[in-house]
Length: 490
Image 1 (cartoon, rainbow, N blue to C red):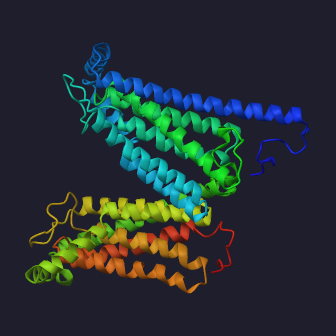
Image 2: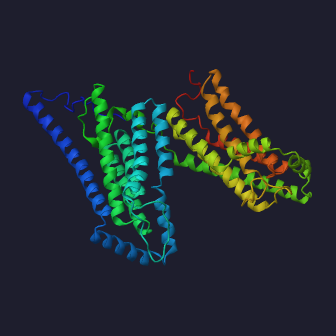
Image 3: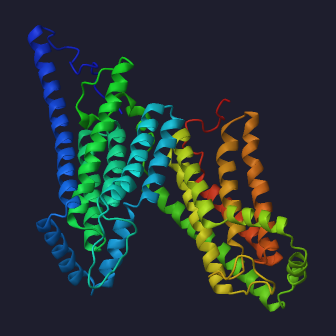
């Protein structure tokens, strides 16, 4: 989007450049910097005072904290639905989720060659991960003790790690994204991020896992750390010849606006989106019906098609420690966590490289649809696992079809379908290799470990192939690309 051109010293090009104007500009700039320094220093001072009174066990603070925790627990404990809602809110401030979000944002920035912004996100987030356990260990405050515990937290209590981590990570992301937004968009982003951070802190107190002073201390420490990292970033910019004179509300690197915008604008078409949803729904229903029908055929045939009994028994009889170790690795490569991790990284790379939502939506619909098809077919069919020792133990789903194999095929075939049509370079075929090799290895490991029959694997291949083809033909992930009709150059 178009933006007015502004000099690095924040003086408009057509402004009077007399000494008076220059002095006024410098004065405003110095005032902004002073306000920032005072805010950071105030947060650091507040954290220091809170730390001192907590460490010394100041009774008025301890009594007030304990009373609030006890009273809130009495109000919240009888309402399990409210507790579940607060648990969802508090998850938004968990270190695992925050690290994943920051990692995906950093991947997009690296792809777009904004290495300095990616480094800023990495350093700021790593600092939060270090500060949280270090401060807790040094201060050593125990968590609240309430009459009816509804949630549990590990480790010490002060400061709140969720409050500290969420303010740092979401704050850093906001500072990176600000240049891509209009003034109204910035206000919305500030309000949204602030609301999320406040709700996360409040959830920790309401769930009885932190005192009020823990949350306030976490916010104070986070504000000080964010201010310190911003100041260090400004010093780095100054060292490279880029003067820092713009308001911080424009972000820490305003000239990066074109690269921090997630995508380029594309025309909206509600009618078309409804047609796409309709076709996807039709395809989903037909594929689910076909898979369930094949499952019923397998069950009514006695469950011994394609060596469904003989193959698992033969594999179980020829297990060795080495093969078991290898099989466990490839089985884990197809589980939900591994598939989700690879899918998230692939989605971030697609967003960074293609600058379109369609490829990302393609991957999301592909994987979510596969999961729904697998769960639906498994629930309806309800086939038992092979009658051999199952190395992965008891699983909540039935044997038919194989979710590991179907998810692996959809993920890696989807990635290949995004990469191959966009380039003529020889390395495009490297994306095809995992699309072929990974399903074979995962399928072999699932059979070896006694978790599936051969027909389970075969039907999962058919399911994945049919759903991948349906989603690709309906969504056409390359249609709105700038290179539609001609591949990208190597």
